[in-house]
Image: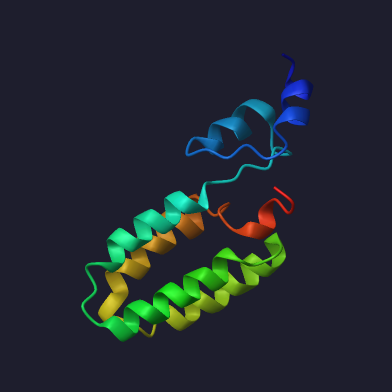
Length: 117
């Protein structure tokens, strides 16, 4: 299988090792991450937050992020979310962890990255 064949078959590879695809296939390879994996990990993290109202708000905001319809909208929504969350002192550990893991390192988990897939 050639690189071009692989790119044609797997238009958007989804994997936890997606950065490896970029190293092998170049910057024009769009790599995604499984949003179910993100949701599972977020659920586990949210269990540590005692305030149910804050949990519900975070969950709602993260669903909004997940369903953004394009990379540009994701970036805009992400910036707004980060600004909003910096005011939430009670969940700063969760916010820091989420920003680092799923907004900086693995941001390809939103629906608009691969429309139709």
